[in-house]
Amino acid sequence: MRRRGLLFFWSTGSPHEMAETVFSRIIRRELPAQIEYEDEEVIAFRDINPQAPIHVLVVPKKPIATLDEAGEEDIPLLGKLLWVARQLARQYGIAERGYRLVLNCGHEAGQTVYHLHLHLLGGRAFRWPPG
Ligand code: 5GP
Image 1 (cartoon, rainbow, N blue to C red):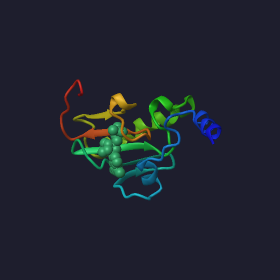
Image 2 (image 1 turned 180 degrees about the vertical axis):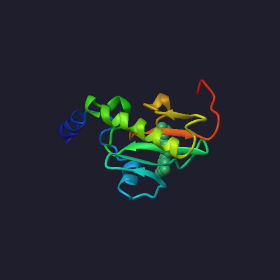
Image 3 (image 1 turned 30 degrees about the vertical axis):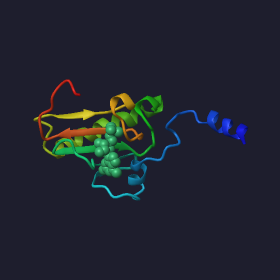
């Protein structure tokens, strides 16, 4: 038993790769969400606890836990997240006045859901530096 436990431990390369998140469940329609955009690679939905009048999460369907765990093969997908956020900002009419994109990577940044996502925040003025 002990040896099987150790083998299991060694076989998990990433601390996050086994974790199921609420975002995977939203992608599979097992949890409700206000979906704002979707294609074969990306989904965007309203944050459940909005920090601004517009607060949308832009999420790759591929379950990458953090930006740090993205691979070189994910470069086009990472670019697409920015592009979808830009398109949504235009759609919401906040492109001209400005908006903020946030990507929290890891616990010190405050990441709470370990499925890579970009926050699109707009509709109010933001301070700098962030807290
Ligand atoms: P993080 O802190 O990881 O950068 O951001 C996670 C975000 O996901 C938070 O802003 C949080 O409010 C949002 N969130 C957590 N659970 C749910 C959920 O079940 N549905 C939606 N729409 N957003 C969620």
